[in-house]
Length: 294
Image 1 (cartoon, rainbow, N blue to C red):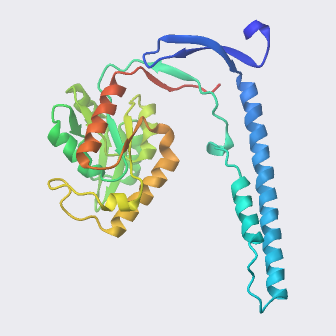
Image 2: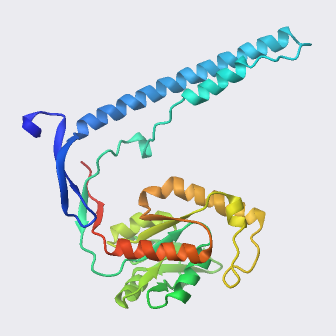
Image 3: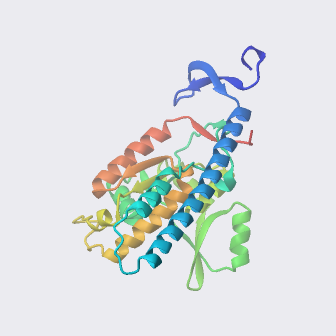
């Protein structure tokens, strides 16, 4: 507490190597939570007001349409009101369950082995294939273990921290095991994971901290235009490009807090070059992970 007063904290700004850069005052968690509550209340009031204005404008336009049935309305008042309502409806970013994460307690982790890599977004398999082929001494795909077992047995393996994730197939399960990941990292290579985004928290619980990289494309059209004479010979259909883009948008919306880096979609060689740069940079960084809440 600076000068023994509430409302502020003294804090150090750290660089990527956890070295102190400069010291200064920041608002306390109490002050930040108050500000968050105030903004949230203002947002709710504006939403209610906007909805009322929209209904009022719609009712007014409906009344004039009935009154002047045979006249084509050239008035743009209704449109202006709707545009104003939309423009004035400020969007305040909220986190899950409307919880303010202005501050988060973290802890430093010493990661001596090479971290696994989880790539999310369009063209996953093609990108991973190119990384393995072009840099075999650096990357290796995580093999999926085929298991003929019951659903209960597989889920028990997940609960016991033996399995990271699994996919149901016809008559068996394809399972990503902790042992497979560790076997690759012990060979001094980055393990390219084949798991769903929801498995990231499970990995953290197992003390495995992947480098999570998201491939961002601007549009479905951008995906459809991609070509590569070796790794992407088949033309991407409009339907497939749209599905990939929508899936990527959903992943970005739900799991962006876990992203270590974002690379821009384009030529496959460019994507892989960007991924390699992110992996090299993140591997040498000090690793901070969420700890108990403040």
